[in-house]
Length: 201
Image (cartoon, rainbow, N blue to C red; front, side, top):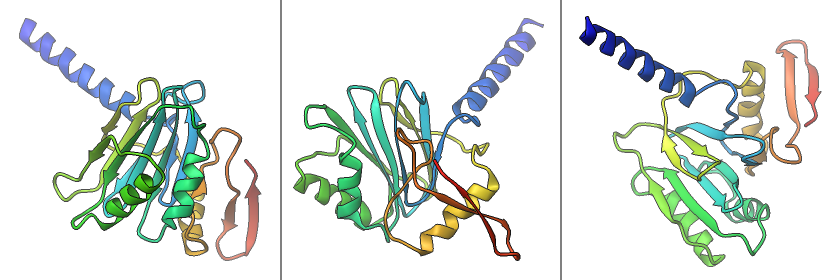
């Protein structure tokens, strides 16, 4: 009976951890998008489906961070400048790259661009099983880790709009829950009626 109780407790605690590690309160960063936030605003931020893409995480000792999801079409130089502009020269930054695939061309381009600007990549997380990564950042301590994507915190209409806008520009879009707000998200309410609703964040 005691073994059965221990097994139930272990199963429950594992399930609880899995739910807590990915819940609907955690902002999701989409492809060619980034979020700028801090520990007061969000405890965690995440991005999923990082396969040939590369996630860039810049974490400050002030518990502020950006998490960006680059793809091969992203304008690297302009986008890195955009991310770094959220920090002051006095802040101590830790930079992590996650994802990419052999020959790691996108990762190397990002690394070289950061090096030219005087920054060093502290940590690299790569796909171990030729699988897409899901990456989460703990804003309390700067820990970057993999998680299993189970739930989505993004409404399907917003998801569709974020995917649709990738065809228009090759820049990083700013997530709507960023400090100071984000980019407009153009929501198509009825796909065949041509009516648009604008969310202003």
